[in-house]
Length: 108
Image 1 (cartoon, helix red, strand yellow):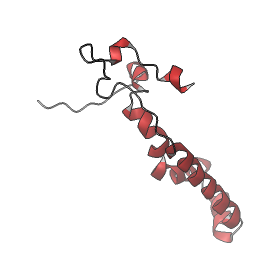
Image 2 (tube, rainbow, N blue to C red):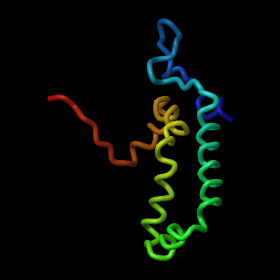
Image 3 (cartoon, rainbow, N blue to C red):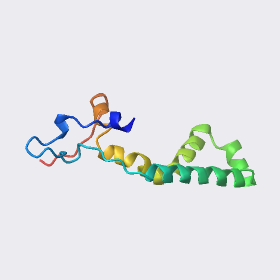
């Protein structure tokens, strides 16, 4: 499936050398996504071990759901670049930028 998602076309290659233009060809890095999911699994195991303690039960009952959801998502943020970083550098999400706002810094 990766060869289809990151298929190299003529537009991605330098016509004179036949090599990939900088930032246009994705080369998969193995291991980073696995490490990210192992980290998430460890977070789940820790949550299972300490989730029944009084402070966490208090938070579950008294903190609003949007804030609790944000706290859960924030546990994965420190290592999220292991999962999506190579895709961003490889330009995988560039096709979707046409439909989204993009703020870009340009020097005057």
